Amino acid sequence: MADLPFHDRGDFADADRGFIAKLSPAVIKTVDGRVIWDGDSYDFLQAECPATAHPSLWRQAQLCARHGLYEVADGLYQVRGLDLSNMTLVEGESGVIVIDPLISTECAAAALKLYRAHRGDRPVTGVIYTHPHVDHFGGVRGVTRGGVPILAAGGFLEQAVSETVYAGPALTRRAVYMYGPALPRSPEGQIGCGLGMTVSTGSLSLIPPTVDITRTGQEETVDGVRMIFHLGSGAEMTFLLPDRHALCLAENATHNQHNVLSLRGGPFRDARAWARCLNEALSLFAGQADVAFAAHHWPTWGRDDIARFLTRQRDMYAYLHDQTLRLLNKGLTAAEIAEAVQLPPELERSWHTHGYHGSASHNVKAIYQQYVGWFDGNPAHLWAHPPRESAIRYVECLGGGASVVEFARRYLAENDLRFAAQLLNHAVFADEGNKEARDLLAQVYTRLGHGAENATWRNFYLMGALELADGIVPATTDTVAPDLFAALSVEQVFDSLAIRVDGPRAWHEHLAIDWHLTDLGERHRTTLSNGALIHQAEPSDEAADLTLRLTKAQLLGLLSGKGVEGVEREGDTSALRRLVAVLDRPVPDFAIVTA
Image (cartoon, rainbow, N blue to C red; front, top):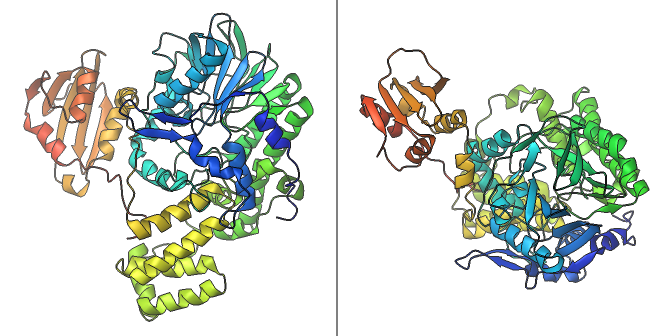
């Protein structure tokens, strides 16, 4: 901590550079008056860092909390601080191109309105999605109804909708912990998530891309604006605006260490490929750009500073990858490697390599998982009891719940918060009614949160404390928005159905249903066999139990509970009822800190 350059105010100067105006008040609501974004709630960050926050994280939060319209370069603007991500606007010959239209349509509309108030009522003439996470596309209908070029990397649509739908309920539940939208905005509560402040909770939307970017070097022109693209991994792309000498880094390089695997869950990002992607961007574009901007945080100006920024970001991901493999091959487990790995001094002294959103600790564990999976090779861990059953046995061995609490108090007094949390977690899982254990664990989580440099760790700890005290906090965002559901391919629709089959209930059901999609001219068969729903496109002429003739819209309606009205049926109609009877429903508010 003593080596960190708190005296260096360069990031603050960059974060304020080009400021034009704020949205005042910085509060965005739905049409029915529900608040989905409140930038003003972070005004407390203008004060000095309190004892309830890590000074480095407080500094990051102060930078991320800045909001408004900013000029980045001639004809290039950003609206920051009106959602988790930035919305960038590039002025063309007849209108404006929107890059990454935030999460919620309401926030995107407010951002565009703020831009137009100061730059004129320019029409939106194109949209670019730099990445298939919802903070890069969810607000698109707030800026356009379609009919304009929409550019994204090849494979964008499949990744965007599959992640959101397949594991959507679990990811949404865990996101409540990661982003902490239910926590009070205060020095004791939520102070951001490192990448931005939090997630908005408005309406999600998606308009499918009309132009696929499929190769590095591909050049496209929209509304007179030339763009040269560079493809990274995971349908993410950077691009150069050569006539503006501006480089869009998407989410590949931001002013913090990003996550290789998000704490909420989601697709893994290959740290080695990430480093190579940054090296390619450095080689291809850094010498041609006077400013580099991204989907999060503030820009970097000056060719030397851009090269230095990209070099250190590159080195960070390469170092984490290579050191994890080096120590893995010496026999260390993921947890042991996470304790051992420390960034080199030059990187440690750079603010933008600090783990405000991702962290070296959980990134190392993700890299370990990529190569050898969850099992560390120790036979004792091969068939361990699940958490509740283990907890009951640990508590019994330690002399009961009261004894565990006393042990935890001792470790708490010695400031070993980590082990106190482990002990108390056992006590709570063994007996959810142990109020003394719950209250003490909430205190431990609060202290761990207040000491965390990583914002997402802080939010996880504080959300755990909140739910121990007050019970489960429900999610406020439904990720399966109509646009996202409609964007599923037919194969993805049946995949999402298969995920809901309650295997044991379906063990003895055997049935086949043919689905003739009249508007697409496609035939599909789903076969329920041994508890698994198997999908086959263009099946053989072998007879099915039931044949349904319907449109894709009718299929989606049927699966969302609208019934079979208007659907042509032939065969045993009970087959559909039998299939529906074995479908399970996800639990959107499952327990995390209790059994």
